[in-house]
Length: 129
Image 1 (cartoon, rainbow, N blue to C red):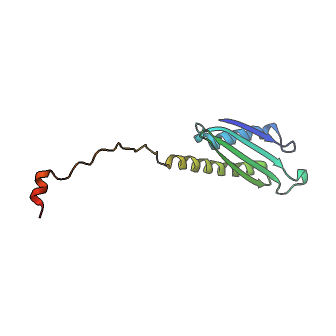
Image 2: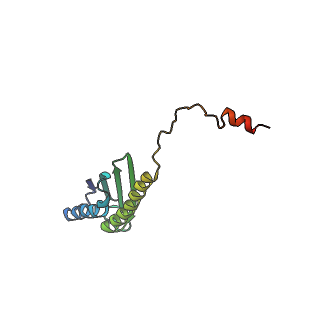
Image 3: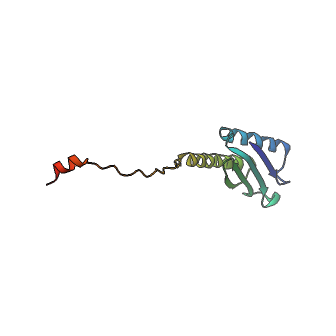
């Protein structure tokens, strides 16, 4: 599982990026074999003005041709991240369960066999009216 983190300059801090990577590994570790890459984008939409303006987008690319994208907004970086990661964890679990629940379609073609008569000629004559 490869983790790609991109943060806006106003949000970026080496300590925060390490925590983001650690929390991502912790949240999605049980699906590590099914995940190719996790991309996390954290932006501050209003700049340093404050308020509910931190946006987090978590994109999880699954190994089996699928992608789960979760988006959230909030005031603090780590709270928004943990909310998005919990939603991504549930969405990835549902996606993988859905894939496992699909029945395996087997090729059920049968060669045509000539119908065998239910009655032999002798039995048919006995039971005719």
